[in-house]
Each structure stands twice: as C-alpha cells, then as structure tokens.
Image 1 (cartoon, rainbow, N blue to C red):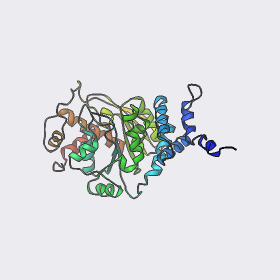
Image 2 (tube, one colour; image 1 turned 30 degrees about the vertical axis):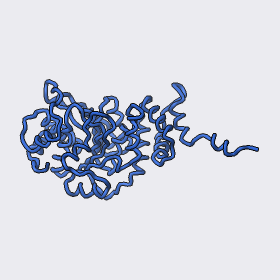
Image 3 (cartoon, helix red, strand yellow; image 1 turned 90 degrees about the vertical axis):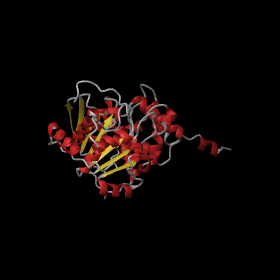
Image 4 (tube, rainbow, N blue to C red; image 1 turned 135 degrees about the vertical axis):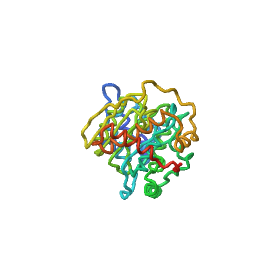
Length: 336
C-alpha cells in the first residue's frame, strides 16, 4: 500500500522553484523576471515561505545582486500589501534606512525646513539592524516628534506639520522582520534596497540615498520602471539622503522615465573630521541658535537644495541653493 502521507511530505514546496532559479550555478542560474519576483515576494509576505527558504533566497540575491526587474517586482508585491489610503496626499517620499555613524543626521533638518515651507514630506525607515548607528526613529523620539503608528497618525501629522515618519514595521511588519534578519545572516539583504522605493503614499517625487555607488543607477532605473514621476538618487552621507558638502555630488534622476545625471560641486576644499558631539542636544541647540558649525549648515542647505531641485527641475542648482539657504535662515526656531 502506498503511503500517501510520505508522498505529500516529499512534494516540492511551491517556493522552492525561486530558490532553484537563483541557485543553479554559474551556467544554470538567472535573475527572476518581474512577474516571478512579484510572486516570490508575495508568497513571503503572506507567510507562504519557510524561514530557511527566505534566508537562502535573500542571500542568493545578495551574491548575484538584484536586477531592476526584481526590485520592481518586490516593490509592487509590498505595495499590494500596504493598503495605504489614497486620500493621504504628500509631495515628497523620503526613505531613511541606513543610520548615521560619522556625522549627525542633518538631513532631518532639511526635511523640517521643507515642511515649514509647505512641502508635505512623508518619511519611512527602519532602525536597529546595524550596530553603532544613529537611526532616524531614535532621533525623532529624542526630539519629541511623534512617530506615525498608523495611517490615521500619518494623515494627522502631515496636516498639522507637513511631516510624518512611519517605521517600516507599521507599514509592512514582515519586511521589517526581514531587514532585522541581518543579525542572523550577517549581511544586508535586498530588502534594504527595495524598501527605499516603496513610496507607500504615491508621492510624485521620490528621493533615494545609497551608500554603494553602483546601486545609484539601479535605483534610478528601478524608479523609472515603477513609473514614478520623479526620482532623485545620490550617494548620500552614510547611505542616507544627505549631501556631504566635502565631496562632489553625483545626482541621478528619472523624470517621467527619462534618465539624466548631473554633478554638484563640493562646498569645502577639505574633508571635515568626524563630528565630536554626536548628541541630540547638540542638534537641538544648533536648530535653536546660530552655533558655528559650517559642516552642519552646509549639509542641511545642500540636502534641501537637492530636494528642491528634484521637486522642481526648472530650478537651477544655484537657485535651489539660494532658496534652501533662505528656508534655513527663516526657520521656526521654536519648532524644537
């Protein structure tokens, strides 16, 4: 008599085909199509893949390096699970997934002056996945700026102050769980890349900060493939969306699918040393007063200028920088 239970137990798991596609060796493996990537990530997010399979899948992608089609499929799968209300309007999608180590997260002040100028900024990110870093979530909490725990919170905060930050765990808990697998796997996974492109509120302008230069073109092309109206990508300080005024900045754009790039000159001729005071108290003091910190001011203004030009490409670099400096000079110092 045939033991049907044994036959059933030996049947291949439905997710195994995606691991096989990626892992058949140099000659037999290939990248996933957008449709396959969508199906694979949908299964993961629905809890239809085993943890062992997820780990193997993510690391095979990490070794191969993900394609724009794979990123597009992953993002679309995640978006289909987000269920963000279409009624929430925002101008700018700002992702924050890297954390800062060498300098304080001055880009936060860039978003604050943009918000005070009337631009609705939605920020999302993750924290705690890499040791010895300052994460946006922790800084905002220390500055007494509430996090959005749900979409109602995000709506209220955007309406009240034109700024909202929602942790990834409140947008897509499974993705947040996968990012935190870095502690187990020992390496960052593709989730760190494609989570940046989620754009859950469908903002017309999406900014991207990456650390490894080869990924800038990948994010630019992926944003175009996703159909985002405007995407601006930079190699940001520490991997965040922050211009380092010590370095020449190479910015890549996708404007309605048209790809372009430009160079912004460095502000300073010499590189600044690592910041000595990495405390929130120093950040608050800098916002409220005119503490002499040329690096911080230049980072804030340069980052805001990059955002302003991404929001309105008719602005020249010079005009964007001048506008950003005016926004900084006219900031509401009582905000913090």
